[in-house]
Length: 346
Image (cartoon, rainbow, N blue to C red):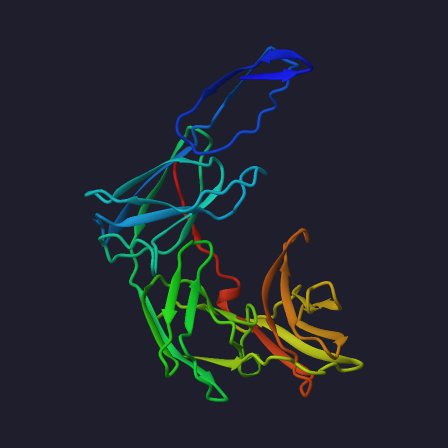
């Protein structure tokens, strides 16, 4: 490579060695040194096997994807990488980012489901150092679950071509569920995991006043589908154009208690108005709280801080009811669910 500066020509020798990792390395090619060399990383390698009742599952496509979308501060992210198991159920991934948390899963929905109807639950692992191989062992298939139910509107509006989308972090796939004209829907072949069920429409929101559990957004709710559900009802409401004057003066005092799914008190939960920077409080050892907030507040949001207080995990939201100043909030399994971390051997 040559460059011209003030009429002079500087020659720069570039030496590159690589074993296949698709990545970028940012090297300063200034003229302070005579020779600059760098190496593109080989990456980490992963091996494993898919089994069902102790027998190998062949032809099954498994995917791996990073759970964090950055790599050592360089803001690099590779899309999900597929691999099909051989006749002995074995698979191998090469040239992944080293020492990063990944997940392994099977695609649901409109992705490549391969030649096998078998599925596995999403599981996490950490890739080994550069150039090393990690065996993540046998991935055992699970029985799929299904979700069916209906959307309900109070004003009997036509739903049109409404679609539900199901997301399941950290797995990356596109799960779209068509909704019939009567509001009914059904999807099968799901791994038993937590899903964010979202209304893919700019005409409707969830009817927060008719939903007892926390919402994730105004259009979505999280649900742990541990077993097949046949009667799931999701109230929705049409979005009104032009909200009019809905401002309210003064403040409201909300008293409440936050518990876990088995009735255990949830202490240390941050309860906040709107965006988390507005008035907020923290639940006591008994899970109780008192929050004073502006009367025009749209949402009350809940967060769980890390033990060190440096990070805060969003748990969900609910709409305050101005005719009811006492609330009981139960955090379901979907708020604490985490995919299993694989026990692996180098």
